[in-house]
Length: 229
Image (cartoon, rainbow, N blue to C red; front, side):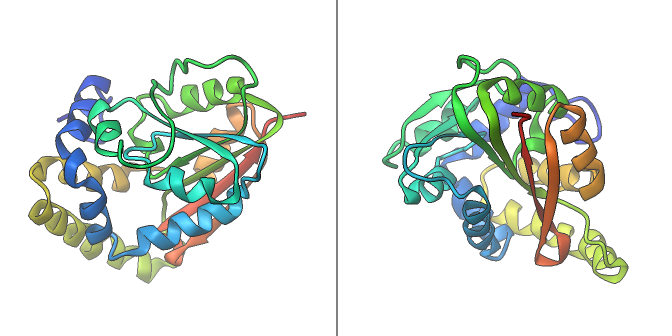
C-alpha cells in the first residue's frame, strides 16, 4: 500500500477496501468508539434529503450511510469503486452501482445532491473528483462531505495526533484481517487538509456557499456547498 502522503494508486486503494469489506463497518465503529453513527445522523440532517429528490452517496462502501440518508423518502444511490464493499452491502435495501469518482457514469445534472462520508481523502485527485461531481448535480444542488479534520483547539489537536490516531490504528489492526489498511487510513488522517483548506479546495472546484460544521471537537467536519444556479 502506498504511503498516504504520496500519490495513491487507485487499484491499490480499491484492493485495500476489497480486502477489509467484510468487517469494515464493525471495525469502523470500533475505531471511532461508536461516533460514526452520530456523524452519519448529523450528516443526514445537514443533507436534508427529501421525498422526490435523487441523491448520490459516493464512496458509500457497504451502503450503511445510504440507508440513513434515504429515511426521509429520497431516492438514494450507493456508488463505490470497490466491488468488495458493494458486495458486502447487498443485504441492504438500497440501489448500488460501481463507479469511479473521477469518471462518474451518470448524465449531466442527474442528482439533487451528492454526499461523501469519510472517503474523499482516499480519492486520487479530490479536486478533480469535486469538479466531476459538480457535473452530475443540478444547478442549485447540494454537496455534503463528512470527513476527518483538524481539531482547532491546540491541546485536543496534540492529543488526537499523538495518541488517539495511534490507538485507532491499534484497534483497527485487532479487528481487521488487514492491519496495513488501517495503518494507511490513520496516515491519511494526518496528511488531510484542515477545515478551511478543504473549503478552499471545494470552492476552487466550482462550488459556492461553502461552509463547515465541526463535530467531536473538530476531529471530523461536515462541509456543505451548492452548485451555482
